[in-house]
Image 1 (cartoon, rainbow, N blue to C red):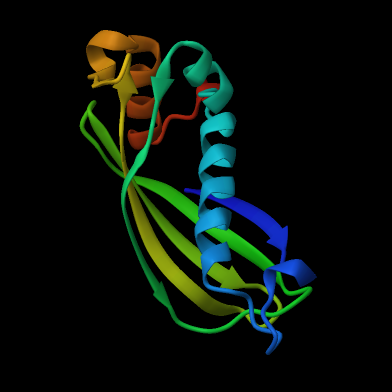
Image 2 (tube, rainbow, N blue to C red):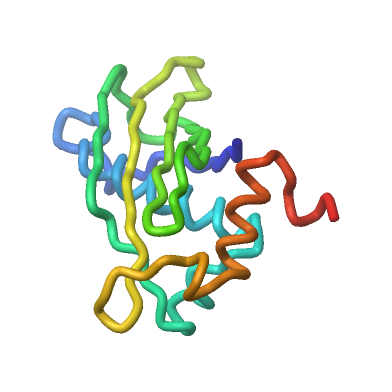
Length: 142
């Protein structure tokens, strides 16, 4: 599990001072990129190698609102990986009140040259990194 920290910005809130629901999905993307960078799987390098990872599904449950200047943390983990798709779990917590603001999952596939690809065959180094994380081995553990 990885934890990403950020602060709610004023422009992310609505007229009532509550964080607009669409921002949670943006924060999930920030956390996902943070996790991938942390394990040595740069989103930029993947795209430079021609591998995209589009979102194919999102499920989010809003539990408690956040507001401007709240400090939040997003716990993110790889829930499932098949080589063709990857699913992430998120818990978004308002650290100001220690309240869970939302829980979510996002499902992604891997695409290369406009077609679904299997990382095991198309990018074995990426496949290996993800499998090591799932086994509890971080790249820095080597």
